[in-house]
Image (cartoon, rainbow, N blue to C red):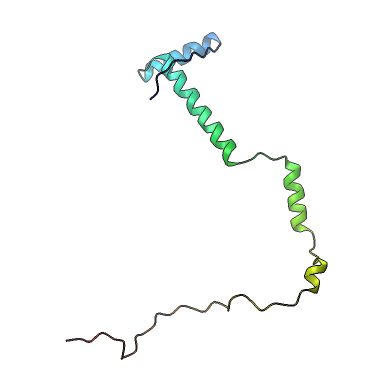
Length: 108
């Protein structure tokens, strides 16, 4: 771990300071270590939450769901396109193959 060299000062209510000192004492760590660990953990959680998901206004989701629920009408280009055959044949149930007599290993 890198050396701690930068100071960060915070003002708290007297009752909060007492609670923090008591909690730090319960886990046998200095108050500064206790506060630093708690603040760093909270900062990591906030950063992770904001890097994973981008907050969007509720109206965005309302518009998205409305567009998905709207009736679909093909574009002119799609309406003129010929019907294409399916890209794959329908799936069939998989069955293990039985080796033919000529491909079975010889037994001795």
